[in-house]
Image 1 (spheres, one colour):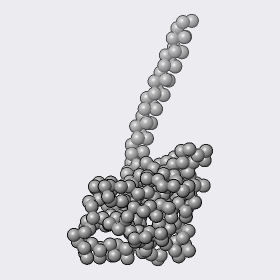
Image 2: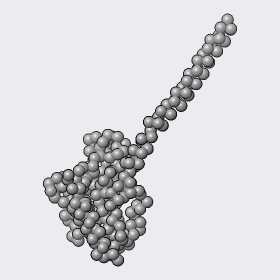
Image 3: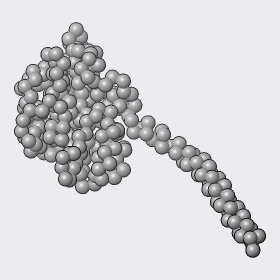
Length: 251
């Protein structure tokens, strides 16, 4: 089994240099220039909360909701970690944008042939045995690439070594079933714009729980609709019969 790759982002080490975005843009051949928010041309961006810098990017969920809601299979979770998008399959429904619990995917609204855009976890570099571009260029080690299990262990080792420095939680370990991007912080996550109201259960499982009830709902609904159809058809038959009857009397 291929070890799942991940990123550990230690917010306490980020100095806001924006090297991660620059490296990402270079690797993905995106337009140069600083962008403060995720966009179709910025797969990662830095948000500021006072003097704290927080990276925003696709979390590459272990059980991605974008993949579960896509009706044409344009999103897939690879065995080594990345959640990838196949633009040749996309029909532009944008269900992925609605379903993502982290509001990550962006749409090329200004393009004549729009695509959904998001971080690709440098899948081509991973296949070549390399690390992601953002981890490669980070000057402080705030972004570290490696095996997910090993990064989780390192994260908790850091917390144990400096309990007064870190919040005792690794964001992404369990959120929505776990993600391939993990965060450490000294400031409560909710104060840094992280969603802390989301479940630890994979969202696709919740979807399947609902879908499993659909056959019963469809069966009951079908009987109900059949009843309405019979009543409506019967009423039309009666009206036609009465019309013929009235016509007959008019003669």
